[in-house]
Length: 457
Ligand SMILES: *[C@@H]1O[C@H](CO)[C@@H](O)[C@H](O)[C@H]1NC(C)=O
Ligand SMILES: *[C@@H]1O[C@H](CO)[C@@H](O)[C@H](O)[C@H]1NC(C)=O
Ligand SMILES: *[C@@H]1O[C@H](CO)[C@@H](O)[C@H](O)[C@H]1NC(C)=O
Ligand SMILES: *[C@@H]1O[C@H](CO)[C@@H](O)[C@H](O)[C@H]1NC(C)=O
Ligand SMILES: *[C@@H]1O[C@H](CO)[C@@H](O)[C@H](O)[C@H]1NC(C)=O
Ligand SMILES: *[C@@H]1O[C@H](CO)[C@@H](O)[C@H](O)[C@H]1NC(C)=O
Ligand SMILES: *[C@@H]1O[C@H](CO)[C@@H](O)[C@H](O)[C@H]1NC(C)=O
Ligand SMILES: *[C@@H]1O[C@H](CO)[C@@H](O)[C@H](O)[C@H]1NC(C)=O
Image (cartoon, rainbow, N blue to C red):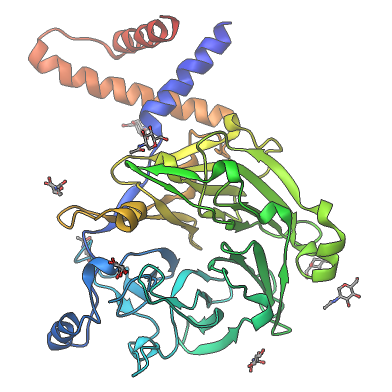
């Protein structure tokens, strides 16, 4: 009994003081771009090839000194759909976006078609120094005049920024309703690399082999949206989305050298997994439908969009759309249950629609939030900060959560120190004005009894 109480008290202390350890690195009210000149920017605004309020950051990736930001062409007036900011430049926290790899790659011809990159949602920098860009190919899907180009994977060399390859998906792998938003890259072997592109419109995964320069389409009933999980509510905007496969996170290689792909449809409460052994060959996937596993449920209201597996700690990070939160689960934990899920960050102002999650090669967690449902169904307040990039070392972000990888005694020590530090601080604040001194121990006792009282009453 006593141990349970102590446990509850510890949990409460964690919840109140130790989580949400991310800090905001960048924030924007509106996006702006580094045009070649002020004159060019003025012209773009006049010709409406740049309409600031139509630009929303959707995807992020971090590689060395660059933070990449995608801006899909859902509406007119997006001058460049793949960009970066130079993280060495610390003169501003609202930097202008620099088109990647160049303005020329985004410049539109007479027909309105950008020359190299149409409209990517998410990108991935692999450990071999290549940037994988999953190009959705659609322009203006929120306007009346959607133009569709074939989706593609575009690969750049991050050392030289040269185009390595552009692979256009074959027609039979792209369906009428297809929408390719998320990409995972299995890069254990830099030559024999595989990319997995999720189709949220028509349930499926297109698998691309870099070595063979070939792709194939895998289907499975676990890729489908759950009709009972299609209602969303974000900051008073209620909407219904029937999105299929969305979050795809790839683990480090297992002992058999295949990774595990963790995946979920957006309109679903469940998480699933499959070994990439079954994805690397279409007929093997078809013959082994039972190799796809249901891990469990996150619980009601817990639909998730993007997800990412940190290969070092094996922690799966994922967004919780309705809860304005990012959560985590340790993939080494066999039970995918609500109680094994940790809360990384939750905030009704700053974390509205966490849209992308990555871990960089220096073990920092990165999260982008963009208030997308408000942008889509209402109107963003242009005087308010709407887009934010959060970061923290992975170990800090997961400490004191259910995903903590440090030993339990470590956690207890940390808790003890932190708790004493806090009570010391509070006690020292009390002393001068109150005149009477409260020792830290007394203060800790008061806090504890208050906590116990609040649990028991
Ligand atoms: C900005 O970066 C420079 C060089 O990296 C450093 O010397 C300077 O202290 C930094 N300024 C701030 C405000 O962090
Ligand atoms: C699309 O067309 C309808 C009817 O013509 C119009 O009311 C609406 O404003 C248009 N939407 C956009 C985004 O242009
Ligand atoms: C990859 O395949 C596509 C067609 O499927 C072809 O256009 C392209 O040239 C190939 N690239 C390489 C590097 O083989
Ligand atoms: C939106 O959904 C929430 C939760 O499902 C509900 O409480 C609220 O009444 C709904 N609002 C509207 C305007 O329908
Ligand atoms: C996995 O790959 C490593 C390095 O290529 C190799 O040495 C090892 O034998 C492989 N293991 C299996 C089970 O294939
Ligand atoms: C896929 O697996 C089947 C059955 O094992 C095999 O016959 C076929 O050659 C494989 N295809 C590829 C492209 O490796
Ligand atoms: C817009 O944001 C600004 C800055 O946060 C705030 O002062 C203002 O009240 C907001 N306007 C509306 C209509 O919410
Ligand atoms: C508590 O304070 C001590 C000394 O001021 C410091 O070394 C320690 O890191 C702090 N612990 C925590 C958890 O903040």
